Image (cartoon, rainbow, N blue to C red; front, side, top):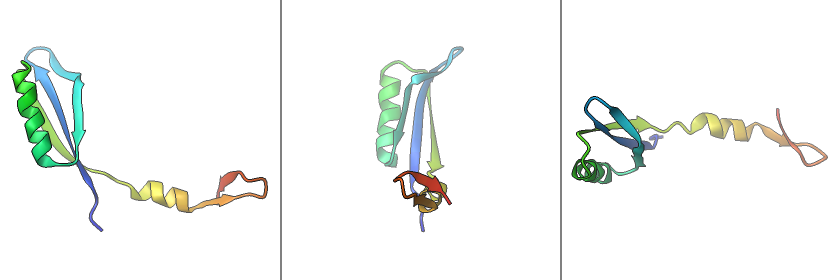
Length: 77
């Protein structure tokens, strides 16, 4: 199974650091690259882009271990 990935892009200014309001996540590399160019056009001094794997397995395992009680409430088994 191939894990999905996301590209995180953020812009920053020299001597000020990254601007968290510019942070965006993309599922396509080409869209992330286009956004880095957009940030440069908006006046940011630099951009950072990182690819991260999205881990979904623990969440799925947790859902699969839930059981409905007689009163209708879900609980961990």
